[in-house]
Image (cartoon, rainbow, N blue to C red):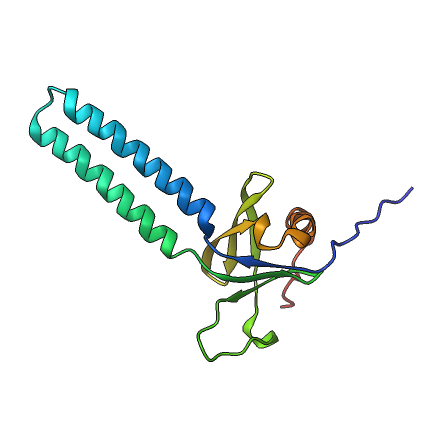
Length: 160
């Protein structure tokens, strides 16, 4: 008996940071602020140590906000052969097939059933893609199948 690999159907997903990721990061930042405030009020630590810890918390929050703002937005497409990426178009640009670039690698970082975190590579540049089921509920299952089955697809080899 021979097993056949059937490629998932073509699917397209919008990529954006989304409010869920922002709300989660805000919740972590607020919880950190509450813990810091509690410690600050009841600690007998030196003022400079409390200030240093508060500075580290603030730097971490600012870094997280900047990282969230820099997450890529656009369209991730599985065409049945490989993954294509189209960054968000600038105003005045029209969408066409020329705007898509091929991803050379796509790896699952985490999977929570309703969100996927993916690392993608285009040439030497790495991206972190945040996919949410709410961006395309009808295509979510197909997108998940494509993400996991694309690991079985070997990219074309360059001929020397």
